[in-house]
Image (tube, rainbow, N blue to C red; front, side):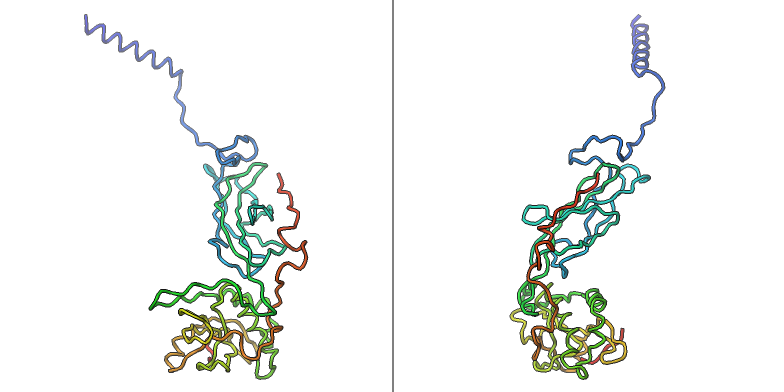
Length: 327
């Protein structure tokens, strides 16, 4: 009797379970990206099911060399699906706790069309937007704008702290900046032979060194064979040691022009430090170079020339729904 009761109870339990399930089992499906239909906001306020963009540059408080720095980031992708996800991007730039610039763009990079302020720290972030829905904001990143020059000379600004005793700072690789400087000022580079053109021939290297100094004051001219009164005509220095830069022989020596005084001078990046040491001579840091007039460097406004040229005062647009040469 006991056995019959247990079997009957088990059968009833199975029947009740099947009745509760209510029919044919369903296979689970993945959620889809909301692209304009459902607008339920996530905890972060986003309504588009995509990843946050990853900021690439400038980040980490880096000092940029332009008042209109290019902002770049990695694309967002669908959280659950990839098809149909083709967003635009909202860009937001802030300083002093206030939003000073916004834009909506179709690519993963953007260069503002108006100037920022000199020597100012900016914070920026990006999010995806599609069909009226918005994704999560990226993490915020910061950068600093160039320090204003003084009468054509860059004498104030960031300087990499001294290295630990017995060590040297690594050489910053600025070949990209050198190439860009050539593209910006090709005429100056084509008229760069100081022996033939005198002061006019120095303009290209004055501009290059001043631009580098807006990033780090350790950049300067090179005194050939240690002679501070004989600056190299196509070579620059980076002071890697501790203490004052002026007059130091603790320098990396970089050749930045090939074909100097030839028919087609152009940009290069050749570290001549070891070659110079092997020749039993030295370079010596100089800034400014002897005989330089302050007007030969790049003209950079101390601040924006008019309020309308600055990010801070603009109305924010609405976001829509080679071979080595001698040192």
